[in-house]
Image (cartoon, rainbow, N blue to C red; front, side, top):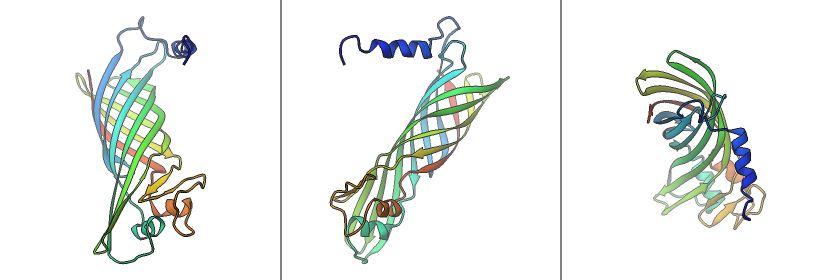
Length: 223
């Protein structure tokens, strides 16, 4: 980037999100949530509360992990490996999620707040398929981007502790599906596809993140 080219970005940020220097200290928080995001899992997050002047706006960064559905192991074998049917299939899947949210406070009362949140998502999903007795195992990976939002209530449960209740919805775009030596892409530029299979076949076989309900309960603490 040329010298000085960053100035319009800095000025835009300053106009949209002026720092609350005149309105009091910014509140920093950190916490842990447990619940479901496609499958059972947890989130670790940190946030800054009311960092703008005259607007009840907060920002949060979170990293999450959850168990997930791997899809159809027999179909995945046909799409990514071969048409063999020997061996007893077993499977497991998990997903790491990286989340950023802006939170806007809708209401506030003594010891309680209700926020609406919205922000981008990035997931790293892995499904593993093992065919016991068939001498075959492989993984399918994908890393989609998405967008999510929802409602969150926070209730004071101590001088510096809050109970969080979260309900939301995340939606992820289709992304490349890679397994063994094969990759299927949403735009149809596949690498070493099997027989007449395409991205639609791979998407049906592997339960990659798409539209997921988020339901979490947690605690966060003032730092």
